[in-house]
Length: 537
Image (cartoon, rainbow, N blue to C red; front, side, top):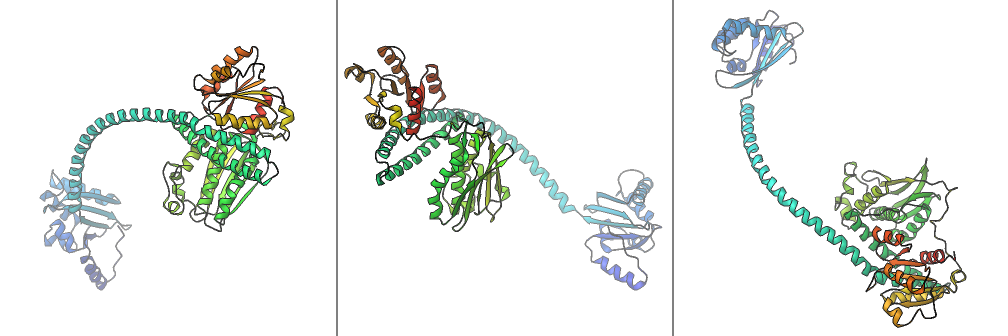
């Protein structure tokens, strides 16, 4: 409570009295001898005091004794109650009490001592607030009962939901198994197409047709990436995402990104720049590539025409930090975590580009699986920067084994190599035969073990190496390899070709000493593996 200003003459006192009468609060002022100087009508009405106790110079003790005798100060001897109340309000700098008046109103009374030991008393009627609090307490009590009833209902519902969750988990597991099985059928024709285009490219090298074959191969590669992403999502959902760490030059990934997204950027009139030096990093090349592709794709999507997207990397101690920076719409700092949630899309972004809101969710899950660090720095209207930090490998000790090397004269390396190809898809066999023949190999094909026997393929001809599909109609490829080894006698190098990328198949092949090549087959990887397994590398 502010101190009451000193008054020096009667005019000022009259003006102050008039002002106090307009206050909605009860107010009284006592001098240092605890005698009444002035009080407003609300003070008298609220405390229901007689007129004689409102006269100037009335002692505070008389007012307190009157109220104590009336019972306002509680039970007990009036003189004692009045003395206790006087001692409290004249020794404490301020007090706050609440009591019910004789009229039934609830008053909140404030007292305050000034620096000159003068006393100010004010009060306000809080009856409405007390009633509201009582009503709220009753509502809370009723609500508590309703919450208890609802809790019992939710307990029963949770039991039902647990049963439903178990069924959903089982259905999700079956979905994962179905997708893994279906992927074999989906990748089979893609595998054949990749082999055909590779053969076409090598036979027409240096001609316009070779450029067309290269474009077709690039399109097929994009399809393969999409399908692989779907499989990765399925493996993430089932907790079976496999990370294969290798050492490779990150600049190669950035160059691929530039080639892939330059047309998209040009179409939107966006300046896409790829900068950075050659750094050997340790990561999963395929998964890291998908992370970068997702980030660059988003940067272009959410940058307006005329904007810029910069992708680059730099050394940070023993690490390499890759940045994807754009001049796009930006993201509010309070929503940085929201963008990584499945199916979450910010309103402004949804208006600019369509989508389901899964891209950054997949990015975060892959980055977590790679054990890399990702940061975001973004503000609305000022663009965004996504940064990815990964381990750097000392280039002086790096073997460069992870960088694909194109053999410009494969026919001299594999010329005369006798290869038996077994696959239940005739189109794949024809494509594989065309590619291997172009490399100078002596190739024979069969769709099954039964066909090998019926056509007497092994009569007078012993293969140097076998390319065996894992999913045959009547047996597994690994069992077929064992049968062939018994037929030809002795050691028979073999490569298992499969669209099944699970650890179980790979581990089983390794226990039998058989190399594994995943479909769709990449010609460079096939050529390198043929040379290695046949010991012609």
